View 1 (tube, rainbow, N blue to C red):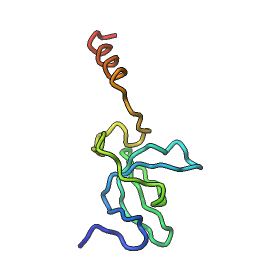
View 2: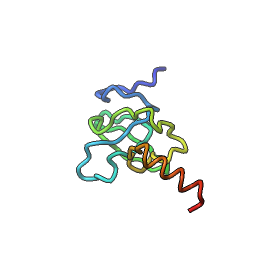
View 3: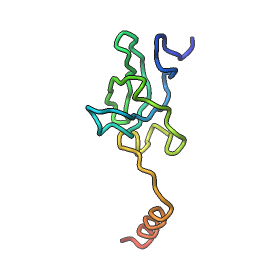
Length: 102
């Protein structure tokens, strides 16, 4: 049986890692990542599971396939926190800080 849900599911498949965007009422979820569980065609919402096992029902228009950067859902630090790009300078600074123990 195919993993594709029926209805206007936005072209997503169950199990896809997605990033949330464009929410107005729950802006804190924008940039968070989760895994698609089930599509409710009546409500036109995907059930999105986050790494803390919480579920949110979100419209397909507020979802996009997560990029390869940090795309491992299980154990991902970014799955329920907004994704912030790290520049080379900040990365080097953090590495130097960790290496010195300060």
